Length: 195
Image 1 (cartoon, one colour):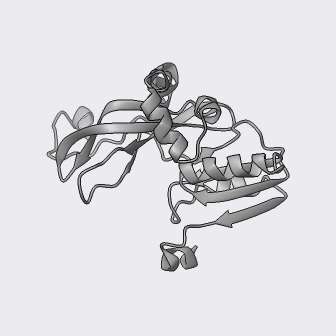
Image 2 (image 1 turned 90 degrees about the horizontal axis):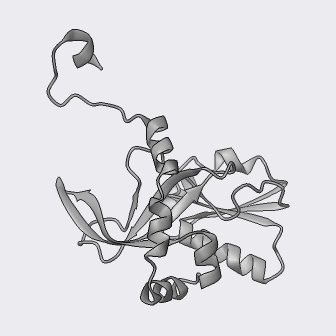
């Protein structure tokens, strides 16, 4: 850090997060399990209404926190949030997404864990031997599609959810499967066309 090196400080100095340390701390914490244990019958019903049955809520360790802090217009705000742990193929926790419940107008519904890179949601982390891969936008869409495919006999399928159409996170997955299907949201056709 320049301040340490030169014995002075700079206003508005930007310090890069220690990603490795943050990932280690995230994996060593039980935060995501605590969030899962917070699920009430009402929370489970909300997730079921989104298309995720209880057995899959448990499989993916989905959770709930009554108070997630986030920044909006330079202010720290809080609201309840559903949590989506994201594991890589080595079964390491690489991020937690927070789906905010009724955020203020103009505030996005999704937040990730601070200090770690964005990550794709992988429906079957640790498995790369499936016959096909579906790539969709969003974790919940990935979950619902995976459940639909498994329930209809397509259990030899991987599904990942990327944060948005501009995300390049699909690249590390797409070349590991014989068949790849990309299903982007129709709500942003210009962005989708650019991909």
